[in-house]
Image 1: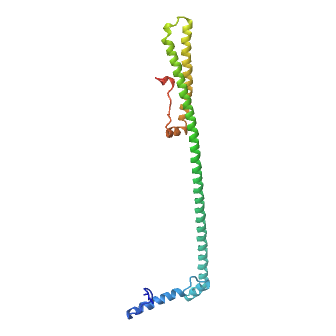
Image 2: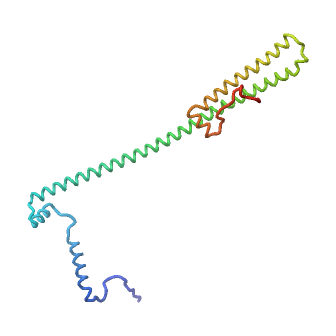
Image 3: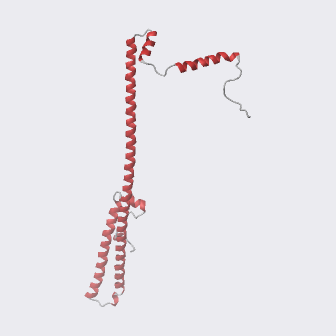
Length: 208
């Protein structure tokens, strides 16, 4: 049969020098267990009577204590309500922030799509200008072979007129893009997406 050695528990022998300390410790523990956690008003009045304190002063002190406890309870409730209100506001702020971010993202996509569409239209207008300019240059290159007269002059004037019309159409769409790209919040979308901030007008284009 196996035996186990207990590491806790009282010692087998107690020295005489330790007796006073042991008795004092035991007395404190007994007093702690015997002392109630709370006292009734009558207990407090009896203590006051032992200390020669009139009962009316003890009652006033008890009333003051009750009022102070009520104030502390109200303050604690107010702090709790304030904390709950702050938590609600934080949650609402988070929801609003998420909604705003979502709205900005959607708006950014809409703005980007609109700018991209306008940019593609401008590119088409520029290609059209280049096409009519090439036809005009071709006409000028062979004007020496044409019979001088009103017909040749009208054909050359018509070519110049078509170039002017297409350049005006290009300028209109380029101006539309520039105005849109410079407005708020489109300007932020332009910077974030890498779209051109401004397009040159026909008077600023050296090579079509």
